[in-house]
Length: 634
Image (cartoon, rainbow, N blue to C red):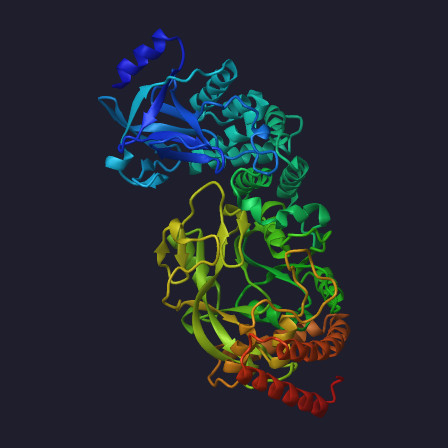
């Protein structure tokens, strides 16, 4: 059916024409109410709802696919879950149309809609072949008036999608039940240029209150659960962008704990769409400085000065450090450093709601609500037991690396881990990790450095953007497609990166290794306040025992002299030396208890082999002797 004939039919019916969509395989499209997505099948399952396809009467190139029950209140579909805004309708352009056959293109990325022989649907094909060809058949299911009105509202939005302000107004006036879903379509339909325009509209609207755009955007936001945090974040962002003031001590209070739920990344949750709105707004902010580090920590005070000094030596001067529930005295150290402009400290201690991951909360708070971090074009997510090490070819500096990736116009690049081993060390000492430990295996896992304003959440190993594709590469400049990123760790390549890597001090000394498993992080039920040695995998004992005496070298030691110099400067700041002594004292007392607990736990665990148990007992005995020789309290 060609465009002219279709247009005639639509005009005769004075509105939209509704059809069913048949795949190349002869199957019919359905909406799966359980998974909240499209399926195709020869038979209708219990959870399947009939789907209709409507062609826009104003622009015959657009098709809207939706369940016939689109008029039903979405809150009544699955009230027991926070999945209020999962996709229920899909908008496409016509990629190819002839003799009642057509292909469908996604609005933003111009990728073809595809149906494979196994009942799956995809939205990412680069060209149109057999599986990307569909046919229309007359709709035989009556639509209620409410559903037809909703289709009309979708059509109004689609027709105005190139006029950003008009599209926002149409969404704000639409049926309250679909406003956020329309915003979903809106966000996904924006190309880079129009997304930048919308970003500026967002920040300007919240700066120039009252403003028509402000009230229209507010109408959309108010239908998102936890709407108040989105509104507050947009206001703060707009105000900060004018003055660019720096607040060195902040708090991510318990009211932000919901940002630590794993499901915030699930398309359809209210939190997800709040982060999309904020992510788009933050794209408009242009950083004035080069790079900052974002880190989370708990009870890692004995490492802060070395970690800061190391990264200052390679050229990174600014740090955003989130901590929660510290018991080692490091709050006092972080406060002094923040007050003297050395770091930005965000106290992330919350209400300890079960299921909250404090690390996720920190990353998502930083990349959706914290305006100051946007003053930096690049952001690196690096833990306190990790250190970025540029190659000697990069002159031990981060700047040649980010300059090269800037020229390449990538959005995110990653560096491989290289795991460091204990080198026979039993106890902590006030020496550099680079000098104490030796370089071991080259690991395929990575850490990432990314453009701060282009990502709206992050995992420990890589960031992600909810609403648009990004350009990913290795630190060496090898480009990788977005579908090679995963929901877990990111493995760009099995080939270790050369321009830079991350020194991962995962094992350290026997005593410090046990301390690592005693910091009281989240166990799924909430943050553990009463710290003790704990583990969920008995392999941790064997891992350390096997690598305790591994020999090797440390390429990181070439920076030792400069790191020592920077640490001496930090220690001269009034209050730093005293707080460090308190941290060390608390560490010595607590770590002694945890080592003995590890021996008790290991001895009663039948999953651990006898050789590993004997090795652990020997390590404990040697550790006691060394502590006595050093005169450290046990």
